[in-house]
Length: 357
Image (cartoon, rainbow, N blue to C red; front, side, top):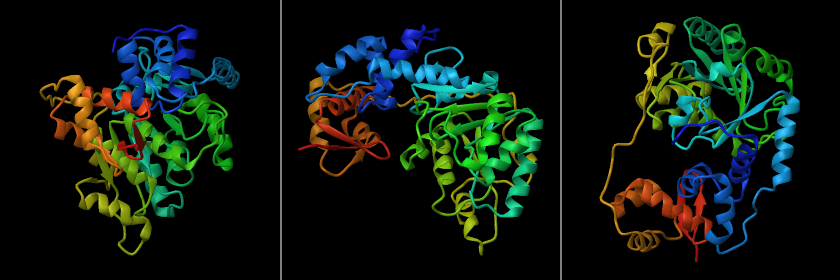
């Protein structure tokens, strides 16, 4: 992707495309690759679909930008030079983000510190120690501005640099008791949101927030987490992006430690002191992530038919389609995007797809 600064109107068009019906990050990127600009992609959408798609209205997009500006926030688009580089390198990065605060922190080496909302006192104390020491060592600390571990991580790293990724709009305070911290981070740290301003958090938005937390970070540290904790999804996303995962061991009698103990069993690195992280990850470290797997290209129409043949009412993931078709990931994703927009297939949670009757 060629990096360049966009005009206000170009950013608005990117926002309209990103918020249009059935346009997720992967579909968005395929549209931009194919049509070059968001305006051209928006113009082409009606012809790509068998049914009428709801395209995000120009006036609504401009209202979002005005609301962000009123809050003191601004948009950064994926192709712009100041978009966070680690996030850009992660799988399925947001097409654009809203930020408020010290934007330079977004390209500082960062570590995610996440964990239980109903955290134990000892886990909160340990989180404050680890976050403070790692921030002092030169890392920005990334978390989700939730209760418990997140709050402790932000408060402990605020002096040096903290990044709060919120599940709703950048101006929506959640939970309410974090209102003062939300505003303080917007001045002394940096707030990040993928959803438009004014959006209230919903359950389906939190996995997207977790994806951004993991994407911004060289490693994810899970301090305390139950088996069904959202922190485990952040750890999984970090691992899928090729980033390091650390977990704090805990008592087998405490349900809040079952998730972290499970992560260690599954190969996460054990975290008991700050040096455990510094021995693996250092503030000057940079990494490039790329998929070196390539397959022989199948003729496009033949590939389209083969994908439809492989799909059924039971959802399967893109990796399976790539493996079974022996086509390039780019070719499969491009056709899946076209077939989703045209109403031939449906997208499901976890990046899986099924065939529509």
